Length: 295
Figure 1 (tube, helix red, strand yellow):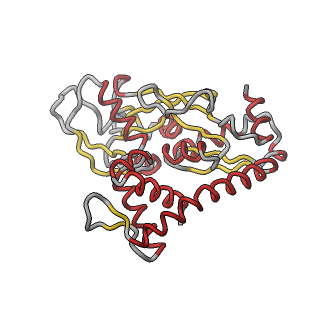
Figure 2 (tube, rainbow, N blue to C red):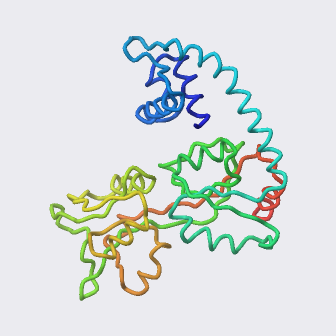
Figure 3 (cartoon, one colour):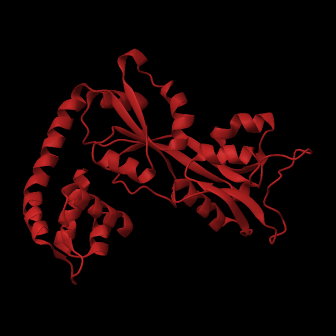
């Protein structure tokens, strides 16, 4: 059981509207509904009377609501108090995206001016939303993520300062033919179908959408496979299932070896910043030392 489910229920009981409650909890309505159903499954009884309109709580739901309003703040208070104690002596937890964890972060960690024997670091891979939530709720100490002005993470810069660590170029690539030209590429013929291995509903999917929104034209793409993972996209592109957009760092060796080639020019590429965020409310001494060493 996740405490977020109880917080969702309290919001729903107060708004009496699924869509409004989902908006206030900053999740999709389908995700919100699943979380309420998960809470009901954990409780073993219905808390929402779905036969009524407007929304009503069941008798059990009313009783649970009274308890939830009392218990939830106490649980959050206890969690924060114990987390604060743990932060004093613990190492650092870094939240990041899958692609950054594969290459950028291992190399970046080598550059930290603090001896490795004096620091303990845990790296956890999340999607961008869950990474941001983890930082805001104290579930991690640092967040390393991509940033573009058109795809911002909406942090209050006063509470969540950041450091620019570098940049990453997202490029379209394909396997080459015998002449070293891309087998799958964006053609001058705007009507020619292009096989693509694409992303699902993840950050890189929105990055590709942004690239296409700025491109001279959008060819008729045929998406042979889709995935949320950039290393899966890389594998399928290398196996010849289509072109795909990938972070340049992830395919440096393949580009140098000629195993992959560019499938489009600069009009089909996008540069992203790589940012390191922290919360000023996190008072862990090790975090302060690392942050000061980077400043």
